[in-house]
Length: 155
Ligand SMILES: [Zn+2]
Image 1 (spheres, rainbow, N blue to C red):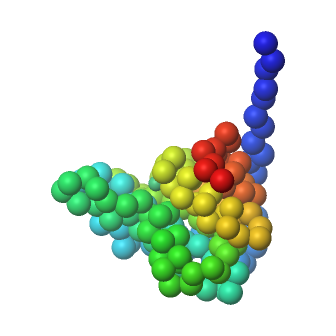
Image 2: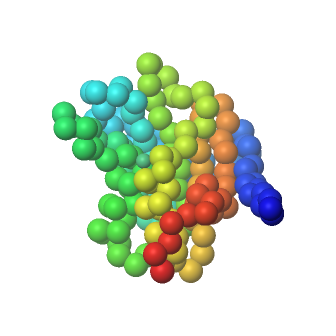
Image 3: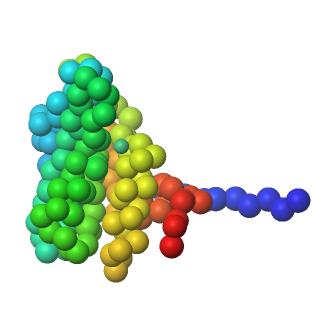
């Protein structure tokens, strides 16, 4: 038997360790939670991304009674795909607001969103830096692939 280990490098940052662009991205993700429609979960997710052309795009989860809504992260990346096709995503941040405050733990994308973001990364010339944003601290990974080891890949 062989054993294989998967290592994921996660940088933990405080808000004052972010550069101006990162802070702008994180603040947009926090702001995006206000556009969340989450009457069923009361978990208001906000996401923001920065494209290589300098455009920022926000996303927020949108629920419905059939529980067939969409997450904040996919709301943002599909908006990017629809409005700026082919423009690579440089960085993406996600956070959530619930029970009157932002989540304490850095907010991580679900598996479906990880797969969807990975598809954008695979079609781009560089990885997408991901920021998981909590109330006091942020986790930064240099690529969505770091959050989806042994990913499904059809090509
Ligand atoms: Zn998701």
